[in-house]
Each structure stands twice: as C-alpha cells, then as structure tokens.
Image (cartoon, rainbow, N blue to C red; front, top):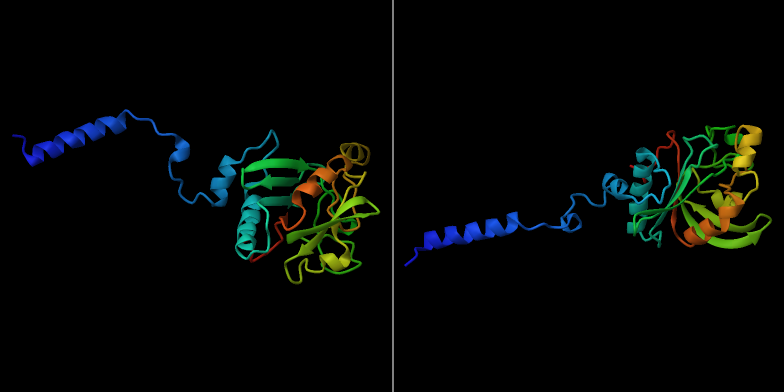
Length: 227
C-alpha cells in the first residue's frame, strides 16, 4: 500500500513534468498593468508608421482613460497631435485603442501666431490667431468653406474651452503638404485650426468624429487630465 505522503510526491512529480513540457501562449499570460501607457505603447501595431513619443502618448492615454471613465468620450479612438515636433514632420496620430493599432499618421498645421516651423505660443482668446493645446472631444461634422469639417470642444478651462466659440475645427488645407514644405521650408499655417492634408481629411474626420478624444501635446502644457 502506498502511503499518502508518497502518493502526494508522485502526483507532484507528474504535475511538474506536465507543466515543464507544456508551452503556453504569451497572449494568455496575465500582464501587469496591461492598461498602462508603457504596456499599451509596447504592443502598438504601427502599420509601418512611426511611433509617437512615449511622453506625449503617456499624457494622451492618461487623459483618454479619465475622459472615458467620466463618459465624455464614446469611441476607442485617440488622436494625438504633438506640437513639440517640427511642423515639417508628420506629428498627428490616430490610434485605435481597441485593436491597439495606428490608423493614420499625418502632417498637421498650427495657427500663424503660434510660431513658424515650431509651435511655441498658445492662447484661448478669440482673434489671437494662436492654437490651443490640451484635450478635446470631437463633435459633429459639417460642410464649410474648407469642405468637410469637424467641430471640436475644448475641455480645459482657460486653456482651450473657447474652441467652439472661436470656430476651431479640423479641416483640409492645400498648404498642409510635403510640396508646401519643400517650397517654403515649413508647413503652411492655419487661422487656428488643426488643418490636415486634403487627401486624408475625409478619412481622418470620418474616423474620429462624434465623441472621440483629441489631445494636442506641448511640453509647456500642465494638465490635470494628463497627469
């Protein structure tokens, strides 16, 4: 007769042998802090686009999560505009956080009084001809003088909450192009709107419209939502 202790030892050895010879898919293993910015950033599918900077992405995702928890946004889409970068490079990203995939990377303009090649000066005031940073909720689309356009509602009091009154919208512009950069040494500048290339505007606007999160980053920004 086998003693209880010996039977337990045999069962333990059998289990150890089983697990040591069994391969478990990595995807099935729990990931600590799987919703943290670093974890999400590490698994982003780039679709051959460049990754945004981790610092700007971290602040964008922090704000997105807070807005999502409050029910202020309804889509798993995050648009990040990094105004710390030159306007001559593609500094706008549209990211599907459900699939963790970068959908678009694009040129985007800042306002004429915000700076030349780089954006440095910001305002929430009407007639300032300056861009506003921080978090927005995308609104409805309409057809204006620039064609299909997207209304934006700023969420930071005193920083960008006058966006709708100021007519700050996303729209297409022919001065947002590589050819304009080549001929002028910098991207064209808008009257305040985050203007995007004509060839991408309809796709981007259709993707991010109706209650998604848009974040305009700059190192000068001090936002409670981003922390």
